[in-house]
Amino acid sequence: MTAKEIREMSLQEIEKKLSDTRSALLSIQLKKGAATIEKSSSIREQRRDIARMETILLQKKRAHVTEGSVS
Image (cartoon, rainbow, N blue to C red; front, side):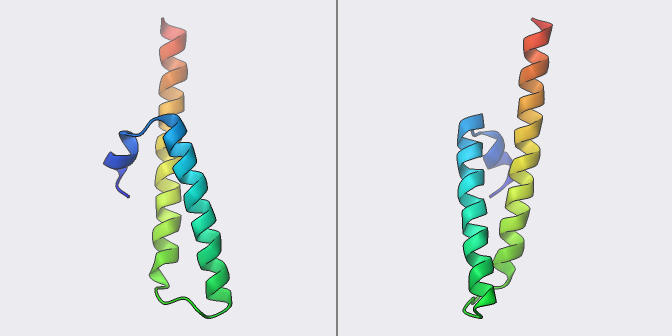
């Protein structure tokens, strides 16, 4: 998922996607522990997606708070 795609989402959509991605990462990590994972690079991709979403979510929340205090 690209940063551009995430920025186009609403706060609620990002939070939902973040929750789903965290669940997927947990599932992948459990599969790795059981040695049944095919693409070990998917763990890195999921972690990076999570970090990207958390960063953009924080930026949007800060912008929302700043926007509310200026008005």
